[in-house]
Length: 115
Length: 112
Image 1 (cartoon, rainbow over the protein chains, first blue to last red):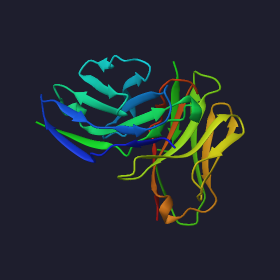
Image 2: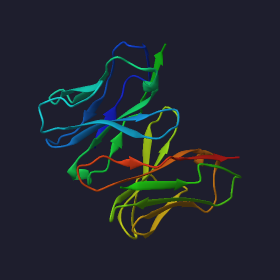
Image 3: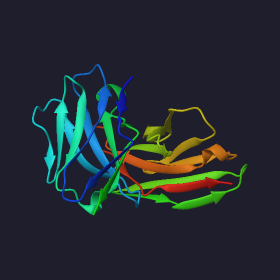
């Protein structure tokens, strides 16, 4: 079974600093997709970044980047120059073809950015 | 462009009453549709998913059911609500391929 683990229930960071959120997953497949979603206080889920397992290059989206370690089954999210608007729940998600591309989510990490 | 609508945004229902939450998607055809429940500290729990009209798969045995009467309509129901059904419910869709899911704004259900 595919599982996604986020071991940090809560994190905090000072504005303008960098923070890394951890995510590990368990799968026996070689081809799959990983995502980070953001859920701000409005509770609207928004995609932050995605990574295809067949790509060795780590995905980046402006201040957001990932450290994808396929052998270690690790997929961490780095937020640089943190902003107050980054305060949110962050969910790591996994999908693969053997499970009909149904997303499996971790339990989430609550990130608070302090001024 | 594609949009997803989910309603109502909030709902307070007495124990034993019925439930109907509705979700519709616009701008796409034959989407995969999902109902998730979000409980504090437990992430997103997949309740039901559907890959086509009338095709419903249940992930967790419970007091809820789902239906897909039209291609872009997904309904979450219960005949008799329990206190434990309280939570935040999210509808989502994707293309059923290697793409991300898109979420509705959610429904906060409180059973009293």
